[in-house]
Length: 382
Image 1: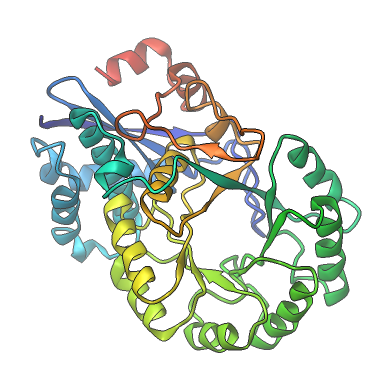
Image 2: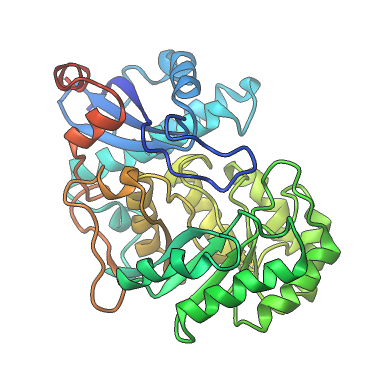
């Protein structure tokens, strides 16, 4: 089975808020689906946390390297793409695009072998996993209204992040967390994401340490991205002193970037994003590296249904990965996968067991959000 072509479909029209200081608009495109087409007619699907224009430009650079390649050898082909484009810069649009290609190649390998990606990664430790609802922080008085409808859907774990947190004063921060904990209830998991990778993040080590003490009083399960993403020494110091576990790593790419952070002891929980880190091939290596360093591995590929599907397969293949992030209210997650997703009575999400990523793409939704006419979509997908 050979790669015949790769198509990119940028998603727009209902792009959810990111909580960023330079906020996303519904028409902004920051999530792009990848379709790897083969000479045998099979299609593999991947996802890239990067704008469509950058993905299309990257595909034009990568095309001479992937055309005619074997479509069921994801690790070798992805490494070939990395090795021959190092001079374009590690970690940027090229690396992000290779992530989507790699996910799609694992999908194809699973479909060709009749196995789920989780089984191909070494075996399934679980058949379901707890999703935590990922919610933006709102000002005091609005947080409960954001969280309670999601709790009513069956979620029993919640992460609140970004927005005004860390940007006004300590009293505002605590009021937000207090309201969220009261709404979530004492038996639900609650995590806090400061969003330290936002533009010109003001929080420093002393702020993060004081805030961690406050979060401990509300039984917060982890404190995510509390510092600027390049502040390695501060992360190490915070992890040693903090009363709550410290999480991060979503902005890092490829295993080489994660190694110094894991060796230095910067994280209690590491969160590589499969849609930009280099794909499933790289994320598996990072997950194993984390295990060797006693660091918990929780994936961060939540941004589309395909990214979530990849996270679910990874969660099935790692014994300690018992949570996945779920961005609530996004049609790019809820509608792109045919049939959607549903929680069971215990707030758990079933891990697809069908071959590959285990999902089918809702082509009507894809046509709508990629602004592609149905006949044009059929033509592009062969």
